Image 1 (cartoon, each protein chain N blue to C red):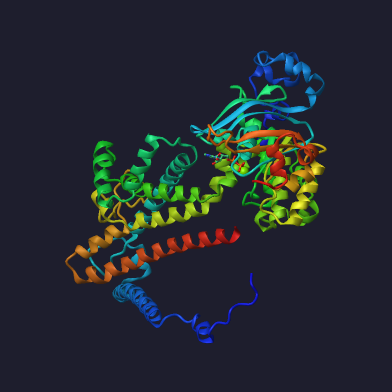
Image 2 (cartoon, rainbow over the protein chains, first blue to last red):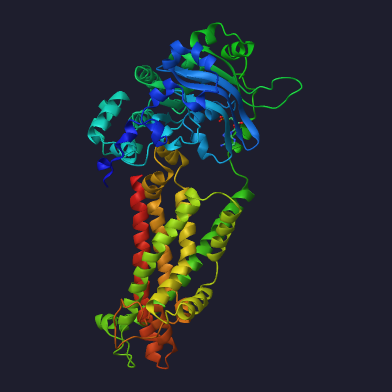
Length: 312
Length: 302
Ligand SMILES: Nc1ncnc2c1ncn2[C@@H]1O[C@H](COP(=O)(O)OP(=O)(O)O)[C@@H](O)[C@H]1O
Ligand SMILES: [Mg+2]
């Protein structure tokens, strides 16, 4: 196979494989204000001008339906660069659904319909010309259950660069990503062993390393520690703090202490019925703020009840 | 939990672990009946095999494998049957693998779930249960007459391919379905296209089961007599033996066995036919063992 000699090296530099005209320099076009974002409130972006660089995702009025059933309704929030944002809330409130919107994994569920808008660096993630495959390369994901490929550790880590035709030295990618995922010392002598021979915690760190191999900007993690023991969990938490220096991280967790320990900002979701007259049940964002505020002095009564363990 | 439990009669405490007598008897009896069933099946098979072995072993020799069919039982062989069966096997494998695995990949990984694909699936599942002679009639009308391939090797191979294709598709789909969803998710999350994920992760993970299904289907195909007999296999083929000639007539071991049994001479009916059966069985045994070896090799590596 000759991926490595392929001419498609622009993949590493171009953002979302847009049409040729806008593909060359996304940041510039963002600064100029691309035509499709003009209608979306210039006033707002002016107000945020100072922080604009820091906003990775700008979510506005996002709703997700599975078939005709709403799973998540009217979410608006921002995800900021090199921060760890935690999503907490009772199960079934749409945290995973929301997370999957950021790398367009919901596209793969036939019944899922996403409305509203997510801008990724001022670029509409759901615009027609955006290639969902390229989105998924730029925005990595780690799953609840460690899911290494049934292959060697080495092959697990070269799969991403290979399919993305990255012109890189595979040995180097393997070592760097394993070092970054704090796994190198444990596995350096057995790179050709099957990934299934690792422990659960090691497998999950391998999955994190695997996500790093394609050099994403954002890493989405859906309850990455829920299948792990406390020691493995704490290693992953340390790792997240380390990775935060280079990556933007969004983590779903059902463990409130974990959110409190690792995240900078926390978003609390709920799926409670809203009023007596309206008993439809779907996920909603209740409150998003600095983690310290959410856990000590939240604005919303429901948040307070949840973080103090009174429901959920 | 209360620590101090009320005193319980000792008797009740010990009897609590013993199964009621009636239950034990029923359990033993059921096990016995099941064992008996198994033994009867094995015994019938053993008698059959021993009978064939006793009848046929005298007819087995190197000459039997390399000689062409003859009118004289002591000079006859099944050379053209062996070459015909091997040619069929290779041709059927070459056609079935890409078609069967391709169809399975499409249906399992890419096809939209709608009315048409459901209809297609139902048809494939039903085709897997159609009697094999029906495929022979299909071969006769479509390949022999309509497409004009005549009673040739390619007609036989196409007929058998049609016969095993539905089974291979169903088995391959099951193999693909057994690959965990998470592996696909992991691949897609790295920016691989669905096609890349299918080709580099899902299919390789399913290949051992697919191969097992393929080999078992093939061994069914080469044991079949009715379909290729109807679709024009000959009883012998001597003068111009070119085993790979697609457009020439051909024969196969089961067809030859059928021929031997029909001959008037006692030697053909018993000794020669049994010897040919032994050859066929050894061939099938080798294939089934290969399937088992492949399955074990890969399930251990997992
Ligand atoms: N693939 C799917 N198809 C249909 N409904 C789904 C699917 N995934 C999730 N849902 C529904 O969406 C709601 C939110 O689920 P989810 O996002 O998994 O919540 P959480 O991660 O917060 O537990 C639930 O009611 C769930 O039943
Ligand atoms: Mg979830």
